[in-house]
View (tube, rainbow, N blue to C red):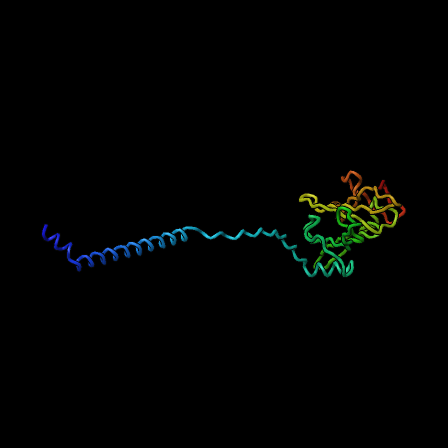
Length: 225
């Protein structure tokens, strides 16, 4: 009991005790500040920054296959410098390379007719490295034997061209005159490769039977109504 009172009454001991108390409080504040700072750092590390919105994918159309130079040159020789090659390959399914080219009329707001609008078109075939015209569409439809059946007797300055490919029958084309005697309600003329005659010929109105050609336009049986 005496030792305790002596210690308590010693001023040095009391100052030393008060200094230790201040030091303890200072250390406690430092530790607390360190813990708060560390906690904030942990919170900051755990929060991901907002990611920028992904840009919408831009849809790109596949590039059209390049037209071989010999095909493009042959098309220009037959139709002029503005000739446009529409198809190239074994179009008739006869084992020979052919191409379909045309003088295409650009689309305009006043000219919004479905299909491809053309003024002229040709089909050429390659034989022994040489291109030969085997069918033509200009004012009329004709092949190497004459005018195709069902071709209009009137001079046609513009056609609507549509076509489809069949693995069995090959290329089938549909030529619709834009005007015949002022009448635009006419049937398309169907044209397809005839494996029997080995040339492109027109079809009847059922698009099943082939029609014969005529060497004279006046003798062409025009049934477009």
